[in-house]
Length: 385
Image (cartoon, rainbow, N blue to C red):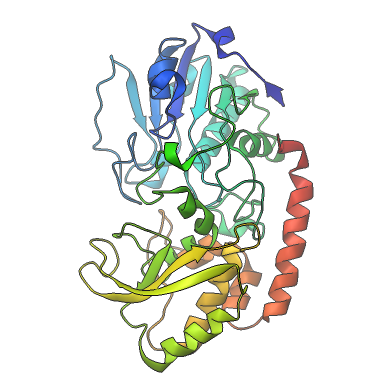
């Protein structure tokens, strides 16, 4: 791995940048504005949600327009899957591709998957022509730290919400994860990391939090997201259309004695690490828009002990048992894929699916998770800095 502690050494280089509003604060500006004073910045590459997180999930950014001194705007989240891959001319006319964008610590989050696709295209360009731009990663803290959760995504479940081999909660910074991709997939791209603390502060304050996307309003959202994102593959509301998405969740059918039994079962799971506050909520958009949902607010009490993924897997298994006529996993297109249900793409592991289907005990799952997490920690040692 290579590090660069003074980006002025690349002053004047022709550059493109993958970024959005989460890269803010260096010299009191959005970073794409600051870098235009250092680099010959030609292109702004947009991830899902747009430059200022204007768009909801799975909404094309093709119609977005910005005026920034004649800079080219390249949208990498359009109406078709092919839009995810950067056009070749975006990479051939620059010396440096800058990646300065916040991650939330979960493999489903698509910003670093977009960077992964950029890495792959730079690698192909290098093999074909012998020339390719440098990838400069301006590193930022992982908002949920180094703790890891989950299991490695299996190749057959690869999608825009899952790069193979990565855990649900990966415990790496953007620089660490992209360096892992570069080495693991043998891209052989010249990747240089600007360490945390040079541009972005070494730690994140909730007072300075900039939502990287519309439904990650706080750092607490990042803490529950490694598990709660699985709800996107179900007919539960994950809280979109409320002020606390992923912390608020439920459905109109969570009623009666089955709901009372569900409450009891959840009390026995990871006791003392979280609190479930019963509530009713009215989503203003997305699932059940305009309908009252019965559900919960998830309040994490002990972040170091709480396991978000296990919490949600356990919760969904109970729902399947207690609400067999109401609860279901969604079918149809999800992040451009229609060949597999969303829950399969998100779990990314047949053993976890076996657990959800009642073929694996809680104790077996706990052992499997611990073994997977231990292996991952060993794998990523060289990429933690």
